[in-house]
Length: 148
Length: 178
Image (cartoon, rainbow over all chains, first blue to last red; front, top):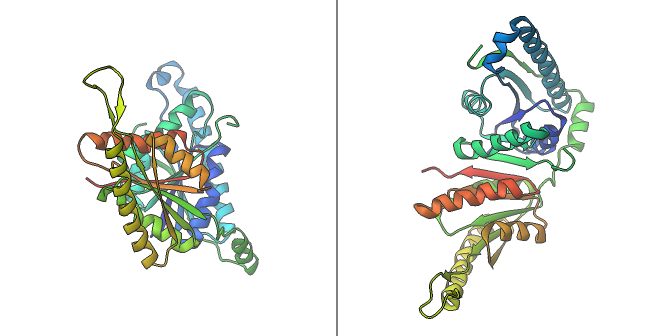
């Protein structure tokens, strides 16, 4: 039923809350896992203010994120799972859907409300928008808002 | 830079040691899902979740709880006063319909060797689904969004959305194809 599971992460530890279920499903169904971290493009006006600083910031953030995703990936591989990782830039929902299509995934599994504050709300809306647009089943776990 | 610009894509596949396999067995989560709640509304679209739920139930030896929520039919305008009334006969009829519908689905699942039970409740859909999930100790709620056509499709979509925002347990949601 599930052979390729896409797991969008958001860099926050909370978004890993979905992983125990993903691991269990991957074992049960013999599925491979594709971790995805989407870097949102910086606001366009930011480039006008301090282009060099922005460039440095973006590339530093990208490096950190890549390191993080690969850490998670190695943890999964160490447990005998097949896991890949994709770090890519673009609008979140569109990118998740594109990667889901390219990687031919049959399940998207994610924690909702991975961030605190405003971004948390936005991340919640990622799940809601995916619900309306994704053709693949979604496995969603709400992380506790009080603890976030 | 705009667009889907790949910064890095790596696919590692390590050779496994016996210890890795042992560790994997421990974390395998064989009983991750014990009870799966499956809200249905009588429509074929809502039923598209059943194959997913059944497949999970088979893998995890989980029990399926099929739920149909019958909303009380309230007449908004009554001839003699402004007090809304509930059509009890109609409500009972829809409860009976729901019961026999779920009993049929339950039978199909049992035929596949899956443990299933049916629950019919009346009340506001989203909160009843959440209450039953709590009561039955469901560790997964699995449902299709857009369970009906026409106006109520919008409504049913919002049930999935309502569950999405309020549920305190994992959800498996699929968008039923148009």
